[in-house]
Length: 195
Image: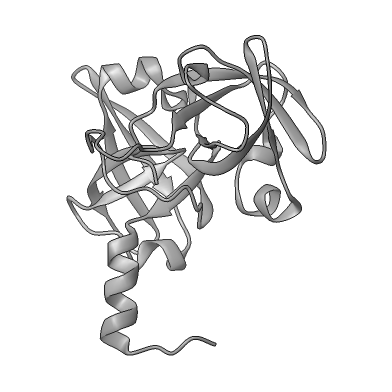
C-alpha cells in the first residue's frame, strides 16, 4: 500500500526485458531486498541493492499495462516506499496496481501551477469524479474537471519540481490508477460475482 506522495525522483540506470536498475537516494534508506516500491506508481519488488541503486524485476504484463516499457537509461521515475503501519497517510490509498495508461493532452499555466489534461479509456473514466482522487505516475492528485474521455488535474510548483510530472509533455504516456474504494463500491452495488 502506498499514499501517492512521491519521496524522490530516481534515474533509470539500466533496463533489460526483465529488470530495471534505478539510481536513488532517499528511497534506499531502510529498503531491503523483497520490499515493495512504487516506480511511477507501479508496485514492484526490490530484488537487488548495490551502492546507490536498486533493481526491480518487471514481467511482460507490467510492461504491457504501464509506461515502464518506455523507460530508457537517464529517464526520471517517481519512487515511493510502501506505507508502514503508523505512517501518516498524506495522499490517498494507492495500491500500485496500475490499471491503464493515459496520454498528456494539454498543459495550461494557471498562476504558478499547471493544469494538466489527460486522455483516458472508458474503463478509467467511469471512476473519475470532480474532486476525487487519481494516481498519475504514482502521484496522488485531485481531479479538477472531466468529460467522457479526459480529465484535468492541477499540478502545484512543488509537484512539478519533485516528480516526473514537471517534465511530462503533450503526448507522453502516464500510468493511471483510480480510487480503489470506488471500484469496490461499484462491485458491491452491482452485486458482481467473481468470474
